[in-house]
Image (cartoon, rainbow, N blue to C red; front, side, top):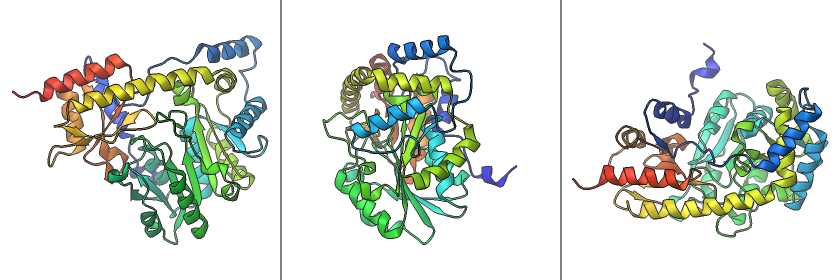
Length: 384
């Protein structure tokens, strides 16, 4: 057994889904899979590529030139200016982009700071790279926001990067421009990379304009920005995303990407082209539906206010309620829900030490699933 795997664990989200598969009639609010099918416009784009016989061979390692050009154009619309030939890599989903980026910018023994609670697999990628994850707690009492002083205190001579998810999974937080610029200042002072996973950036429910540090020219040599088509375009099974950054770092990431996957699946790259060319109206529809489901799940949580408290999410499609039962661990709570109510949720400890005492629920599922899950929970917790 290799030493590099001894401290790894299968994602707790996947562990919960595996457990749930053993029970009949489980309603899952666990895994972050949108309930929608991939839009027809994307499928048609892929069907045309299949008929033309252009998907059977490798693409260039960075991805199809046509797709990278479309990505460059879409980034420019969002005030981010990157060269499709030298600064954009199409990846096999966001997790491959994350893995390639971490492996390219760190050496074994380095430290990577991650605010938490945050997505479960970040810790595993950092450990796989031979590095140490350093958790910095978010402030739940202030809407799960950054505490910049805590970031400063976490930095050591071994720190190489700060890695965060914005909007945040599992809390649904959108980090403020002021917070992010403060983070960029800290990174500049300590010569750190900033790795930003922005997979949920299209799902904003309060009308707030989304801001990325990749928009700031001064920060471009530090910022590695990652996006996936999985959530925004209901393409989780297609395994397609991209990263971009300054040429100085992207050329190093490309070497790792080539080792890991050679190139992203070509058939999926054509799907991504369809998403960028014709998917905007579908994203708007998804956002409207997820906002309705966000409101529904919050209403249902309000009916269990003796069991949960929560911060209303303004983005992504998760809510991260706090368990109002003394001395109850999130794993035990989640397993009890699964066994007694046949409802699958993710224990908060999966997202870092600061997640303990919470659970994550996805409202990416259908309204019927949300209502069925809460009907079962209300029955489970009704006074005897």
